Amino acid sequence: MKLYQAQLADIHKLAPLYVMYRQERHIHSEIETIEDFLHERLARNDIVIFYTETGQGEVTGFVQLNPMFSAVELKRIWLLYDLYAKEEVRAQVTEHLLARARQLSEETHSGLIMLHSHSAEGAHNPALTDHLRYIRNTVMYAHGAKADDAQDTTSGNDKPAE
Image (tube, rainbow, N blue to C red):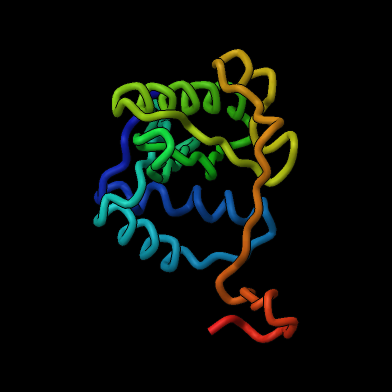
C-alpha cells in the first residue's frame, strides 16, 4: 500500500471513492459533481487530501483535511471531517491515513487536528484513535446550522435572517 497527497491529476481516481463514501451515508452522488467539487477545492488549496493505493493502482481510502485558523491558538487548526476506507481494508488504511493527518499537523506547526464524526463511534475505530494519540473531547459543545436553514431566532419568527 502506498500513500499519496492528492493533486489535480488524481481527481478521476478519487471521485469513485467519494461516491462510495457518500453512498454509505445514503447520499446520492453524481461523479461529475464530485469531480467538480474536488477540482475547485484542490485548485484553490482549500483542502488537503491524502489517499492510499494498492500496488495495482486501486484507491482504497482517503482523508480530507480542511484548514481553519484560531485566534485563541494563533495557529492553524486542521478539521478532519471526511475519512473513508473500503471495508475490506478499513482498519489498516484508516490507521495510515490518521497517522499521516497527524504528521501534516506537525509539519505545519498547527495547534491541533479536530476529528469530527457523525456518531460517537464514527467511521473510525476509537481504540485506533486512542492508539494514535487522538484525544476524545468531552468538554466542548458543537452546534451547526445549514445556510439554507438559518433562522432569525431573536425576533421570534421563523423567517431566515436578512
